Length: 314
Image 1 (cartoon, rainbow, N blue to C red):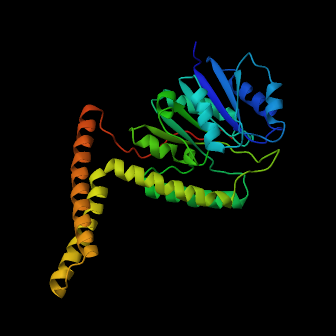
Image 2 (cartoon, helix red, strand yellow; image 1 turned 180 degrees about the vertical axis):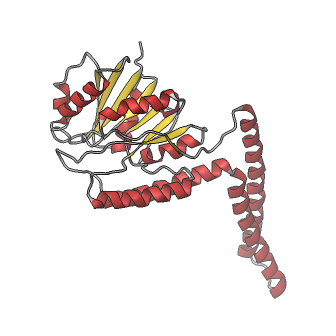
Image 3 (cartoon, rainbow, N blue to C red; image 1 turned 180 degrees about the horizontal axis):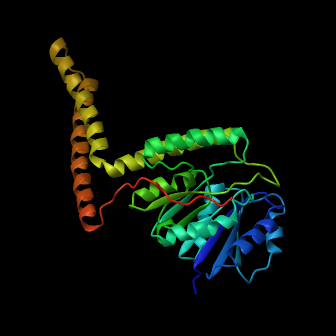
């Protein structure tokens, strides 16, 4: 029988956090009348993280399942592996460094019960060094401005999802930060709630300024996907218009200068015209396909994230 809830925790070199994390999750979930599985995903750790996980009790609540990656692929890949193996109808992800508080999980489940498809944590009072907080704030502003989904803390791993939603979202590179933006394409109802955040007790952070360029590259990809999905004709018509402009400019230049047309000139005009016609055809085809899809499915609406009326307990 499938569990009601799956907790997914990516781990990388967190040997000292494994047992305290397991005990904290077990204590937070003990009062809930739900069947729970806990997936610990070892992202190619070089220390004794996986060995410590093997020492934990497998049965009981939560029921422990282990996933081990052959090498270090990164947080998003580890999270995706856990999501793929999860069997619950509701999935919750959190970091393995004990900075997220498992005691907040019941509040996420309460928001899911209200009808939300995705609940995002907001670390309003972060307990991190400024070298992590500053890039995160800049990235969140950029992501909200470009995607139109104004989440305050995209980088917070503590999130809750309906399984049918998160299992359909492709995750790679640093894409876990853009889950709310991707979910908005399907008209997902999104809530954001404040969560507690603790200083790191063991180990060291794996994040910092080195991630900025990766996030920026992924942001460009996400912005392109979102904009093309919402307005497919604009991209194709814009590119086709540019090709037509190049061809017309070359033809006008030939007429005005009365120059002898060479092979290169004729090639530019013909290729530009053919490209413009082809892109114009694709634009109308994409418009027709988009219209058919939206007429058969529910209207896709980009929902602004709505903060739930819930604050973390002191």
